[in-house]
Length: 386
Image 1 (cartoon, helix red, strand yellow):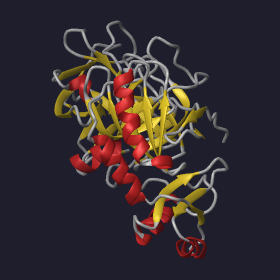
Image 2: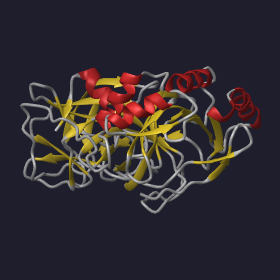
Image 3: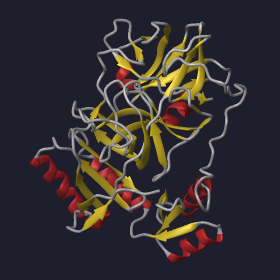
Image 4: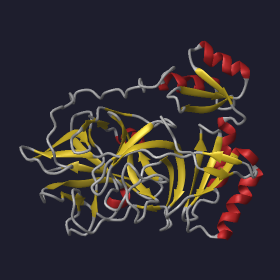
């Protein structure tokens, strides 16, 4: 895995690097006996609805498993660890703050890295920045791979607001880095022209299906972005005009998700994404540094990377979201609600980006995407991917 690492100035005047270009994908729904674009499509694979699948444990990474790494970090405690992440060579790393903890990790078969700041310290720094949440065009969160709190400001943040954030950063020295990014951080706009998407009754709002999900008894739903569904109860497939169902739950802002119930009996919903090319079989929270893909009604970005697993972000329109996944994926209007995934594993629901009018595809770099963790939604609502 190769990352692009732009050099940036830290709060202490040094330099640090972090960034990369990856990702893109998309979820599928199918009408029985009818192929309809990327949202309503039949799938050859269909999971047994009687029991939810367990998420693969990143078996494609070297060394200790993701579950094992997180369990080690939990057992050592947040004052002796600095998180877990996947390094450039594909190894799962457990960050620790002392040699005894490092030895514990080695004895468990893991790869330790000694770091300066504990999870507890970095989380407290994140909390300090959250006191300034609400400045449009800003985001911050703990970057476990660099043992810092990463603060990013888009091109619209004023010098006065930037100075406020840098003043906080200076109090914490090398535990914080502050970077400017291009473009404008915003939720993906509601798309006002046709495309392979879902829409409202009046053809005035277009978004993307995230993942098809079900209850333990087998009732089918799909998830999408909350900012799409906040004022929209009924949803249709754009390409066919087929009625899909009605909204049963929405959370926006703070979070960004909605759950839509498939009330139309003629619709058969399959657990695939990206024009039916990828079966989704499980879900979990993401790992810092893992590769991700995104799909949407307007654009795809299939080569991305998780940059932060929990980010506070404020869009240009003023809404602040907490606990969002930050990636190097781009996004466009109409992509809101689309799936973010790693292989067969569901990770997130696309919310916004800094892409703006720039092209969005696999070759685009220096972009940021913000996504609702799908596992949070599924756990809260008693739902499962399939």
